[in-house]
Image (cartoon, each protein chain N blue to C red):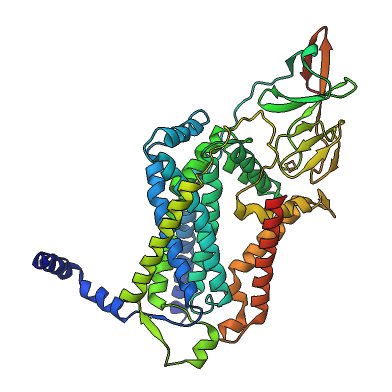
Length: 359
Length: 152
Ligand code: FES
């Protein structure tokens, strides 16, 4: 057995020089310090993404897009297909956990200022992937074509429509027409299973290659204090095994969630029904949704939403570009302002999410 | 000297010219590839059947203090019968962000669940984020039958 494996290894090695890769992995180290735990969230997000790809492909085998088919096909998956309920439930739960872990990963990188030179591109690709993840969430939410999703999509795309000049064409592009109809469903389906995964995979590739190339970032203070004599652990196999163990735990958690809290399908969308009371978007949009409720219809000369959108877009843009305006961290100095801004953002998101949840 | 200078200017002119031709060609090429794709993305406008009036049903079937959504072509319209028995109809599309409104007996008002917007029974936005009143439709009662039609 062993000799077979050896021959096979040699056969490959002769052609693609595996030796280099093994050498590289052997020399890779992960720093150990009291913030080390945050290093795991990127890996967990990656794992959740892989689960999404697998369960997504499985769902694709039975899902049918279309006003008259979508809802029914998911009903079919959940009631007739063996373990269909489990696959769908896992896909929905993973989507939510993925956003959560990606958020934790993002905030930990932010607070450690790990985006600073030379890792700006890693941060940028990460942020773009995060926005794509929100796009995944938004487009995937509509696919079951249920009541909640129908109105969430109406509101979400209409928000795009209030932006002056570009807004209307973008809204029509997203909806595939003036209204949210089956045409919207087809488009969202296309975005969700083809466009977004394609772009996401490219970004993910860059993100991962950069991490391998540049190694793990270390907290600022430590970098100075411990130059040269730091505690590390080998990436292979120590860190990788811990990673895998964590992935196993996450998989179990997912199974528990999916089995004991199966994802509801709700009522089929009806363009001629009133929006149901208690309508809410997914939790990760809740803080923005809640903010919209507080902004009055007219604010000075602007429509309330325009103001809200401008606010959030500007905030998102500043956040994404932080490696370029946080000069201090780039020079290796502590920057308290960044930390306070981050704390404020977290505080704001948590408070408004709770308000939105209990409203 | 003069000859070389002359040659140089000719060369530079030639190079500029080539640059223009090439970059112009590139732009034209990219444009001719992108245009069909972008045009394809724009959904064709579908001609809708113009609806000017729809029959809702018998007056006796519409209870007082109630509201219902009526299909008006592809648009939802809300038909309200007040406590006093008046009939009124408005576009059911919230002027805020496009949700479909409903009649709330408990408030005696039109309510939008999406962001808690409220309109009075004349369709005026009275609280919450809606920026404009709801468009009014005309209600006509002919004999027993109730019709909703465009307000022209
Ligand atoms: S869509 Fe009606 S209040 Fe926002």
